[in-house]
Image (cartoon, rainbow, N blue to C red; front, top):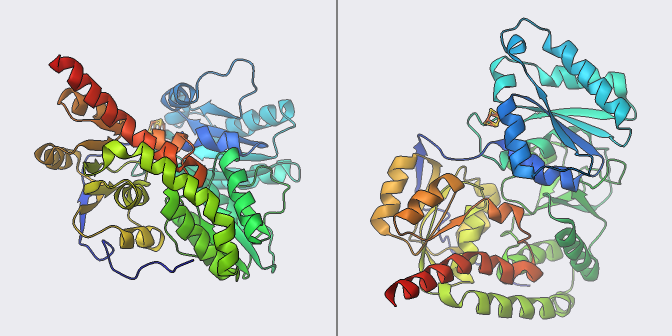
Length: 425
Ligand code: SF4
């Protein structure tokens, strides 16, 4: 259970800050994974037909299941200020809740159109909570694409929940970040085996669970894009446990070790609990990353997972990062990962897509991690790409997923190698 090395790595490297055209999805995208996670929640986007189409195409059309998200479409008369959008919203919400008694939390999700017409969704949420309490709690957050990137949707959603959590003075661990259920269960088992508890998870699967917060709550963050959520938790008295993010064998071990130190887990017990899954993860990563070793990688800013993933690709898969771009670099969260990446790559925050494309083309990395919009053009130019959004939709955290995570990066490199061989024959 060693403490993290105190070498500065990339933490103190100058950050290239860019503010120009960006190529990212909006925060509504988070609804796709959040609605699966929170089983008594409904996400009502107050937006346009474009927002509805984005959600439908990203989530796939559900024919048999009752969906837990929908769009209250703002029509032209709403946008022109000719209709009272609040009245219509109240009517829609009443109709929805009457039809769906299973809904216990309703999120009004703002969008670009609702922000442009300055529809006050926080007042609407307060008003609707008064009407529908105690059975339903109505909250609001923004998923708009104005000046945001898609993982901020989850951050905004969780941050909106924090002020409403019950107070607790209990000494407890809170893990912040939506993880697929199977991954969350693996994590809870590891923590239980270590003897750490009680453990609360934000977001909880159901609103009437035992989630609470207070001055004796310590927070381990599982997703690096939760800066606002962490601030909201700190305002409620909770204390953050900084650590590298739980990707791969090293990241998972360091993340667990920070918790184990906080809860006084004896070193021998930590070793006994983690030895077998660590060995499995190391073996899986070694085999999945064979064709990555010694190759270069370039990250465009997209999911905000870029820094921890670059750490994993560098220290566990043997790749050399040329540029690590991220929409935002929150050193309080990703600092421990930056510490572990040897100095050398450009660290960039924000985006000016044309300038960044020039840097990428000049360096011709072996693998480029980028959004969907850039992947096809770069492939056409002969570069090998990995879609960043896939990393958010695939289970990638903790020991048992470490090999799959390396595999997500090695597959495109292997495919490109095979195509080259075919072309040469
Ligand atoms: S919120 Fe904005 S960026 Fe997202 S789908 Fe709606 S209009 Fe488009």
